[in-house]
Image 1 (cartoon, rainbow, N blue to C red):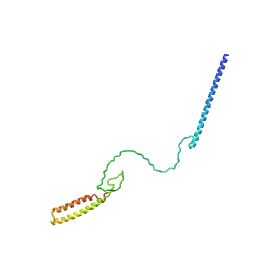
Image 2: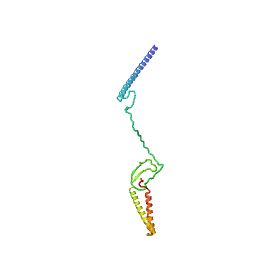
Image 3: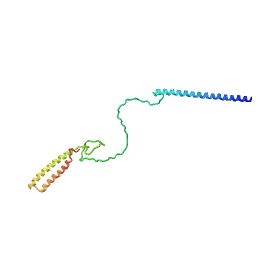
Image 4: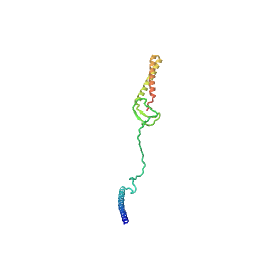
Length: 186
């Protein structure tokens, strides 16, 4: 009997353990079902929100706008700092002073030897040249008269040499001044 009592007690314990195990499993299954319901509810809410922003329910993305292709100028700028050194230096100065009235090149433009860069107002220089021509004609006329008088022994050699020197002096000045060719000088 004692064995029977032990057997009944063992079976009761096993059945009680199984019953508590079954109750525990049923509680876990209830929790799983509740979580699955929450996941389902959240998926429905996500799908609804995606529809509101016109997104596919299975894919996240960005809103895009459709436009017609057109040809446009593409400009891209980049600012850099650098030191530039010239291969050759050119120091430019006019042969004569004057006011610049026209500039024919732009800063940074490549030019070659003989290129017209600017025009200087040469009105004063032209007047000076005309005055020198008049002075040269007068000096030449005086020289010719002094020469004729000297050949007739009317004047001294000193007077003749002074006229000759005056003509040469004005002639050299005129020659160097007119050789600059102001009418073509710019």
